[in-house]
Length: 574
Image 1 (cartoon, rainbow, N blue to C red):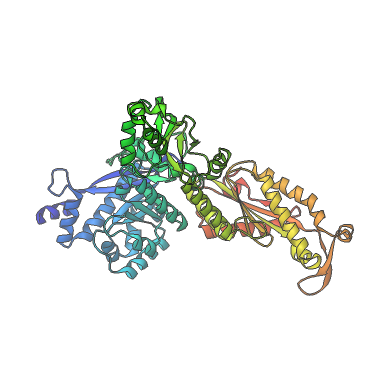
Image 2: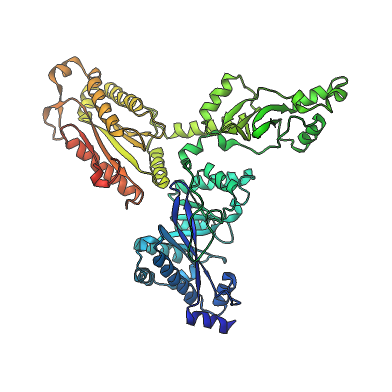
């Protein structure tokens, strides 16, 4: 084996296969992962055997850097879109100098921003501080960093929290039968939320079935990888067929009732009641089971208590044991669509007088059965959501405060779709507040909050209240420029109601400026500065916030108090 390894290294006989990493929203590749193999006729063809022998013979660094060079060359020659993901073990990363990796990348004709280094580890990591320092240097140089196979081996939450990677790749264990396993879906959803809060993108590996792909899309997972989407190949071919329906955003998914769907045994209408009774005994957690007709459409619900009551009647067993379940089923079950929000479903349940906390309802996907939902879980989710919103809401306007604003901005960036941001601020508000009193000041702030809700009713528009007279808007669609102008015009008309009559006649208020000098201040005006963001724009979240603050300052200096970033300044949001 030593001679064979020497031959491979000397002749640079590494095969590089490239596997696409798919962007479910853009229906295009995020990039490609490079997978290295030995020669096809070699006993070291298997990557496990190849890297094991390299490690045993003290030549792991040499082997991994050779694989890196070959991957860079293969990627550049084919002019593939997106970024190149390459694997390095932490021990080799520590043995390298970052300038050495920069030189290899640039020599191949790529920039550091085009390369994502995946950290792989199958042995315990002991040198945490050294790895953290090296990863920090990688990021400073412009490299992306990913943790591979999260949830397998030694790639765990400690590595994630310590290194703050740009990507985490979830182990294929979590993908296998994701559509059939409620526990796995809950784990993936929790990790998705954690990744979003940490400003990290999640990639789900090992997608091999259409059902798994559709399930991860319902969970709001944007990036995935697997044989269904494209097999590793020296020259990657066409990707898995694109879909016209984009994956829902995290904000859209997290409050949809489809998240509550639980798998349950389904009944056919001609199933015998005695057979259904056996199913209930095996599935003790369910108080009812759905009855499906043609095309998997729910036609009824068989309730455990109703079945037991009928069988317990005098001659009940003789009458009903051999009868089909269609005879005893509830023919008007509560049916909801998976895309409905928790609030919509709760209103529907109230309208049907469904006050039993342990009751169940049927969740459908375009009329077809998806799963069962429990009212108790629905109310718990709804209560948790309302408590979270209340905890971070501004007490005056009840709009989301600073924490939800930052979360909304993080989600918008990671969705990777163009969006716009607007900063609304009141000019000359402080002297107005000081002279006319805090009651009138609160009245004016509430007026602005009401107008914001009126003019931005789109479901994808986020309205936040930073505090005081500062508000933030974030949206993707709609005639937002026109809406901002209309908002400003209506505020200009209605602000008068907050002033005293003498102030209105005077056209302003008399108060002290910052130097303590008395002077007249004009009526409060609404200043709005807006900026745009698009995928690929080289701005961090902090830099984007800084640009928005500058836009607000520009707006305060304009005669019409309005400053909207032009398409020429960003290339988008025309």
